[in-house]
Length: 213
Image (cartoon, rainbow, N blue to C red; front, side, top):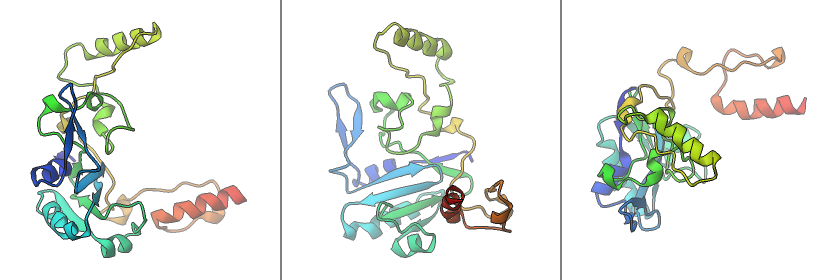
């Protein structure tokens, strides 16, 4: 998968997502003021929409994105077992060779400082670019070592060694497999739990059964 999709940027360009500018020029996603925003996780994005009347227009915008396979509404979420109170009002699913970023800024110069770091709590979505050093930065590994040295000495530091170029990510997951044999494999040491196939949501009850044995 090599096609990054940017639902938050699309929502922002449509006037549905708002961002706050900090004194340092960075932009932060304004969840309270945004009429819609996406929390991305690889090939699935949970989209939260403030006003119910905006749901269909937001869904139409997402469906128009090249690389989005489907957008699930309430009925669609129920069909796939995603009708949870914390799920997005809409759930977007990417095509086989595409995935969703969390990026909401339109200019990399306005990306927040944590965008270039490993920071799972402040980013509104998973960032697979955290798996890589920024290949465009010279001596990036030396920069990381210097940051660790500052940490060891008790100085403040910023481990800003992550790329903002999503094209370095060449693989992804999250959508249902096109064929059952391409799906995940469950391995268990207890033969009594063996079965030909099982729903991924059955892992929960299987784990409980193993703990209760």
